[in-house]
Image (cartoon, rainbow, N blue to C red; front, top):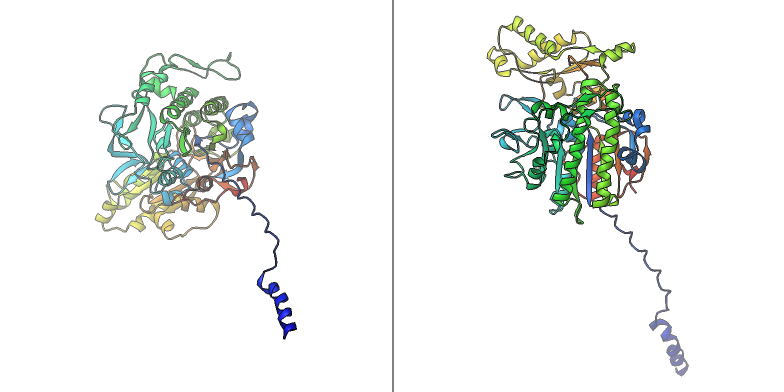
Length: 529
């Protein structure tokens, strides 16, 4: 018994005291949270085709060069909607939505509810600030989806968003409904203006900018070649300070220059990027579009304004380097659409091309319906050459709206140089094929706002009588640069297919906010650190 007791005494500690285990290795430190940018700088250059980087790039040595070398450059990015016009491009940029979701179906269209022709941002419920007395203002009230700026402001109430451009739609649509202010240029006064949608009166810093008359600095000035200033000037500015001068000034590189100055003033006055809450500044350079429409992409003026745009964006970057530090700025850069060469230039090259005046298209529809069913205002409105038929008139005559649509479409299908004609009913019921053109047309269709007949001309055929334009689902109108640069971005050239719709979800991911409501793109994760 004694032996058993001693054995138990000596063995008990083996059971009562656990064996000492090796200390666990320390847990790896959590990766540092990625630094949030202080400012998102969203830049659009209106009508800036992707190939302008290739054709004129040897002359870029400032802003555009910095973007191409230090940014993630997506060389095969496209718009995936039709028509490819300014309002839709700008609404897509920071929303990621196609017109089928955003409701922005053109620069203008016929509103069946009010029975009036409207623009994408016209708003009779607002007043213009800084322009002619009693003029109606503009607002984003027709935009049906959120933007990155909206999502950022809802997630972080201290965030600010400002939009500026020469054009109202280009200033308003990128920042969405919650913007702190949008500012655009008014031809009648030479002022930058806004709307009572944002505030009851124009901010003091904008009034001060207008009073300094920056827009009048170019009176009587010549626009000469940047590369060879001794050659004959491209344009001479009018000498008189009036509406004609202000309209001409914005159709030269001078319009971009004053916009860049306004951007600097906005950064300073609004304190953009001044704290740790991310702000948004959207800047859309419109002057390139005016020059391109008049002269076409092969004209030396387009080369010149492209080179000058490189320097103008470089000045904005230099200012931000000093004010905020470009290391704290996340830049998203694109264009709102491309452009077709002049049809006459295409014919000279032995390519297809020509002109189909818009009024002749609408006129044929009017003529046919009048001859077949009697007199009346058969076309209530339009979006480009696409007709909105007069539904009350059709019904009053006991006719079927789908039948009249199809008759109008059949008439147009028989006209020369029509690539495809669609009816509202075809698109409503998905009665299309699935190639790139049909997909883009479907993406551009919004049932409540769409026209009755949709017209796609053959490639390089225009509805304009002079100059050139854009709007088709073909690559020369859809192919644009997409570049992102700044915190969280891996520089390089990326040749995988991308869409402008991808910018918004990518920014939302980097900013850690909700993806905008209608965004249909993917996150460009190959370019994220």
